[in-house]
Image (cartoon, rainbow, N blue to C red):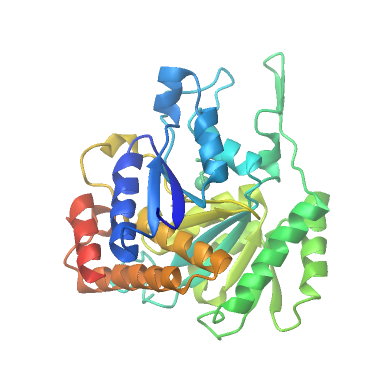
Length: 360
Ligand code: IPM
Ligand code: MN
């Protein structure tokens, strides 16, 4: 019996391809007796067939498993009557029902000239966005006001508990890291629009209260509009950024673009009891089944999953495996023999996966 039960939801579009790639690398890195992968249905295509985007059996399996590994979900043509996408509901139901309040989004530039920013080299961009994942503007998902086809509103919700716990997560993370590339300083940047909205002023005030408990970590503030400039002009200044849900969603894609795109953007959505790991990209239906999707974001999300499990279970073998996967990705990109299409190469999904297994 494997030590850890991992629920996988391969999902829609490229989801199955990249999820299977990550499972292959994880099995290669951990050995077959460490992780057991059990796949469960979910997503837009499953909704079309069954009427359920997240079947109860799938949800229960996710809740009871040690971790969840997800491919991708969403088909643009599958929407609810209110116009919102069905597939996204898979993520959102898991986030809210499992209370996955910290969406961890590492932004890291690897060796191999993948940044569209001039003169940026590996190691100069290495920060983590902590996106509050269970409230903010997303709290209104499915609950906004639609009036006579004339008025539509969504409310932005901030709670002290919700902001405190994500801020604490950000400061604790910074304490474990090596500081910003520019100056080696441990720094948490609070991203908001406190100058305009009371809810964001509240977000900033609660983060500032939390910061009092971390005198060893520099507290920095940046308005959400200004930080989009800073992430382009001085990305090496950042160590950890904490942001409300919607702002975190937006700046994490901008950050991913500065290091090569969504195909190299992993994520870990963490609560106190469960963790959901997936590439921050979408289902890319236009390239489904062509074996051209990059598996890197999901493979790196798998490494994040191992780190999270290693921490929760004090399991050094998992930590070693996570490090080997991350080192193999670095080596694969530096050697340049199997570069995925989205990073300028010609390698297929299976070729990239095979090379990463070889480099383990
Ligand atoms: C993300 C995605 C999701 C979001 C969608 C797929 C629900 O954009 O994880 O960044 O909006 O949070
Ligand atoms: Mn997004």
